[in-house]
Image (cartoon, rainbow over all chains, first blue to last red; front, side):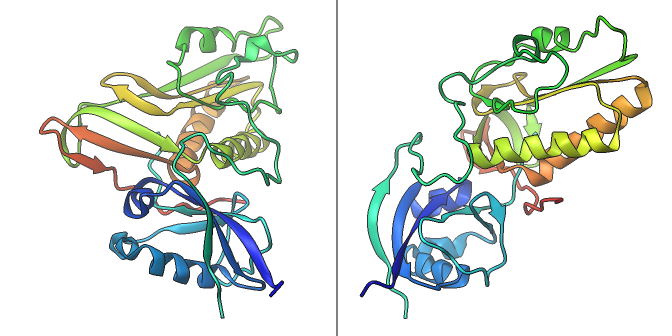
Length: 84
Length: 191
């Protein structure tokens, strides 16, 4: 029962509007991947399926979906950007 | 088997993680520091005030590019402004949102890359976030180089990088009161 880790998750723009949440801390099994986390997030927020695409960062770095998460990682869901 | 449990949920816009692996910024406390206010009047590699909710003082930024030693023969300042139309129609207001900590880091990285490619003597990039009226300055890129060709090229490079590498989003408040996110680029960071 000690194999869980805590992940801070941030939602932005269209993703935030779909989840209606800006930030939350989720608990997930140790050695879970980004894919595992996203799967659970999509289950929690079914409306997220309406958002066409987004990238994922961990501690400010873009990552692939197979990246393994560590305790206290800060994960952000980033829709296509439009600065300028 | 994955266990997910919501431990804490916050909708406060200023809420921040306590587990930062990178230095915290003071963007919300003192959102803007100009190059002429820091000790090193050339380049401020430690500046973390590249995003602000305040109106950008373009004249002050331009003045900060002055080089009394004459190392720079060219200064280019690009000002991006809120336009009254977009692909979704007539626009009456724009709202910018950002992942501030990551955006600060990315803007700093873009500055570093530009400084490696061109002979930049001074550089400042400031992007405003929050609601903005038509004509408001949303982003300013100011830089100086010995020769004008480098200044123009570097400025264009930086603007292009901002549009695809920095976590900033904008949505248009249209004249018919509909709200539309501007279709952007999948974030792609040039390491």
